[in-house]
Length: 308
Length: 308
Image 1 (tube, chains in turn yellow, orange):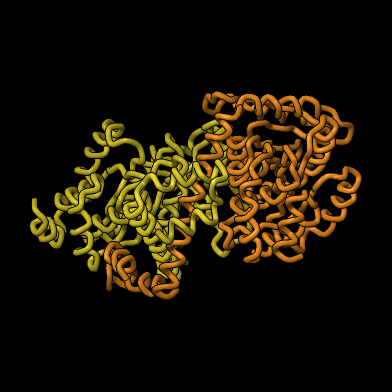
Image 2 (image 1 turned 45 degrees about the vertical axis):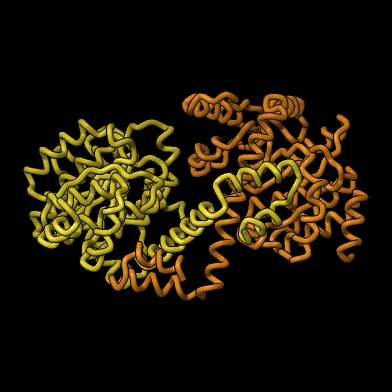
């Protein structure tokens, strides 16, 4: 497919063209940028639900059940599963998910996202992938990220509603990370609710939330069991609750704030890259050595680099 | 004191001139930059010990005992206690510390550091304050920061040896933050070793360390009791051990890496600020609105801002 063909097909909500564009974005090809620029005005129309949590928390089962439920309720759903690790690691998962895809005849895409790259890092690239999927005309996009450090924090810059999934029995070292993860969840899910310890985990989370700062939106805690579907009506209800709480105004204020932040970020990065091209990539390491050896002070060094 | 007078006095290791320069840095006065540039070549000669931990962990008692011990062992010590909160909050503490200062006749300075500012943020400003203190000719500088989020992580960019202080009985919510804090400590101190729970805390920390990744330097855990001085010979021994482990080469490699990182940071910030002056501070917020409303795509927006 060439540029024109991809764009034409995207305008006709073609799933294969979306898959193609996602791969172009994944591979950081220049053509991705050209196409994204041209389709931009047709994107941004879906409500974005982010799902994150530690490996083994059952995120993909939750995504699958939520997707099915949303479709039954008359929504059109696109799903993006972001694998922050290498593109080679997702083989088995990919197989599982593709089977599911056909069963539900909706757009489910699994892609890896480089945390740096010329589209501007994890959050920016993921957002462009969502835009690509939005060409399907879906009103909901579900984004799943493996809760592995950076991704956790960045998903909050992407989703309108962020769901953090926890499970009982992942050991104390995981518990220790909870404090940070709790901060980003609009809804907390205790998954594998049939396991021993799920009640206790739920109470622990409630206690940790009550210790935290008072917020206008206090995250509800929902217990789910993906194997029998228990709790999923509640989860859906809470998502819709949060969507209603945001409304158009809060949602757009939030999106605007993120765009602003991202724009500053991108401009800084690009200005720096441009400067490095101009002065050569050895200039900063050399200057750093001179600073260490007291040949130049850091303030003068910065001024000199800027002036050059 | 005018510029020339301050510099002359600094060259004569005058404590009052150091205090004056620190205040100039604290208040972000232009004169601070002028002086720092001129004294740069005489700085960088002390070994930097960073001490961080949650409020109430007894960091200042540890600093005091360590300072006393170092002086007894023939070192010349400068101390910087960084209060990341407002300059108005530290009154009581300041009083306590000043009493101590005179008893030990060494340079102990308490300053607040703005986390943003034209000297370049918390880490950069703190480093300049250390440089100011180094004009005393001290071979050791102890830097104490309140372990309040950002400061924790930034101190690791400053100190040659970072000591993280924990105490038993600060409650589970604090425990939850430990995982992050452990990452940055070269030495872990369990303070208030006479309290119930200190053995348990020490064992917990050892377990968490053993769960973490294998590192060339495995942080030792030292139990101290500031009230009777127990454990301080051990602590001193471990600091010297880490200093020996680093040697000149590892220490300089580490310092160079930080200078390099900081330089990139400063250059990016300055380039961005310069661009904002050039195009006006409303340009980015306006562009962000246009992106949200699909009037322009983010890629074109960035290109446009860079070109302007």
